[in-house]
Image (tube, rainbow, N blue to C red):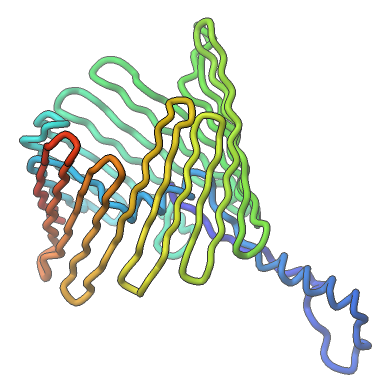
Length: 329
């Protein structure tokens, strides 16, 4: 989901007076004013979901087979998409129709609300999403997701976020069933400690027939001038990500994930390289499961189209998958 970067308004106490109207402050008063000035610069850190989402977007998302997508804007607010998937070993051949509506309420530059998205596949599966922000300062955000597979509902959940000046608090309710007394509830909280450091926690509670489960996780994010570290530690899973912006066109990524209860861990190292003059981007990844994958995307200017090539090789299973995609619109 999209994240707001709302800066807190400066306090009147931090606005300096013109020279001659106030005496020089003492050392303690100067220190207090410095702390207030630093605090007023803190921004909303986003939410826990977007901490790792930024890293996932930099890594390649390989596919196989042939994929053709046609996008058509019917108006300033409404757009439709047609997608044909052929020859995939993971997903069967199918046709998908999607529709997106974007409202006229501007949150910030090139970000509008509400947003409604729907996707229907030829096998009868449906995916829908609704996103909106409201309140006097647009600091309340509601996101609803639903997914069905043929005639059976697979997932439905709602998330309510409160976007403070330097924190985000979230509550998620997934697959609630009052008749069977089952469902999942998740509480998130993420706080900006300094202009570079954010810390947060997540509490998950799941109720199933004859079983209850609760999980507490801690998360943190530290941003440097051209690098970022993201960590999340829980009782059942942990992850650590590092992103280095080596140049304006090259980003390096390292991700380490582990599941202690299963005794498994995986280390992935990847990159993203942009070629602005060629209107192309390269994404590559190699991990400790002996998988190597790469995705190349090329904009076909002056046409509103792009060509995508994908490849993944598993040296452990001695298998390879290749894909080609064409996006028009």
